[in-house]
Length: 554
Image (tube, rainbow, N blue to C red; front, side):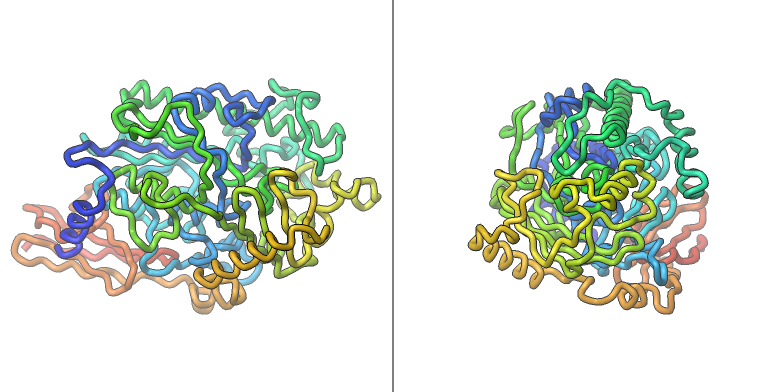
């Protein structure tokens, strides 16, 4: 009851919605492994009519940056509104760690923002992809309290009458594996051969044909101009076109269900291109992503102009507080992101990002970027971005780049990816948008170097960085002895006509159901049902869910 009162009080003091306003529905669409290769963001090659139309009705955010250049750490930051290294989710990926495998156990106060939405009456749903480090990759593998429905394509159709909904879609058409040669990894990699079979089942067998031809693509200076490079980049563009069609299908479903005029639609991607020298890197090719927010007319803020561009710096940790604010749900003060709708707060001056262990390769880098310069610090200055990597090496152009580098047939800009980054890097993004001229090496812009070096030091001093300790030590703190802790069962207490459920574990979330009904998120005492057993379970993020506790009618 106390918690419910505090939530209501916070709502009254700080809700984003006007009194009596109907909470909007919210759809978040996240494409995988894609930089701003979208027509509406100025790409002349991309064929993206549905996303372009969405941008014409909404606002483009071209200066949006993920907190990591790789999926699981980036998704952990998105879903929690916290930098991945501050909650122990920075390594790619916890479930496949070379040492003891584990799951991240965030601090007790950290919750996925859909759970906050659910606690405030939203119906929450997600399709197949989770992958936020305290879950597995696929639906059904994470805390059961975050989503009402997992693994469903149109989750809003299962919501209770008149309930607002939040639906998240993860689109894998543009995933890095879509650039692999179709069914061509056998016998080199049986695992990835199976992955290609799954893609062929889901999207059809890629015959190498599509609207974009190899001759159409434009190459950045760090790629050599070869038929292989052009063919792989063209395949990426054709996957983008397929992803755009999926966006069109989702929007058509909303329209058919009469929901477009009550639904805010957000479209973005989980990090940069699934291509070499992009994914996994802290260059803009790895962390700069497109983002669009489209409001229905009834919910559109007065200052928002359809078809406009907002050039503020946006970090992925800003999505959680922004979505909560759009829903009129209180934004926890502990979130590290900023609410983009809060005009009273000054715009960001900096965004921050990190790179840690990448699959089987140990690394640690941190970056800070303002609207012109980027500074990168490496704790492993001799580990190149172009190191061998079992998954990435299934891309034909990656294997070709390795071969060309070994034969010394790459020019200095193209070969730089195969050299260690050094301890510090500095780039002028205005003069050098592809980040191929390291100003530290040139010995220029020393004032900017010192400024951003100090900014990063200050940020690291304010942010707990779990990589100050070894991953093995961190994993043992999360899962002592390599064993996943089990959340103790909650207690279910019946007093008069009320039922109260409590967990002994700080930070544990609780779900309950009556009889064979649907599981609901417990937020405070509930009315005792006239008949039917009340069952409850608890889960601490990263731990196994508890056994079921119950209270039968008196």
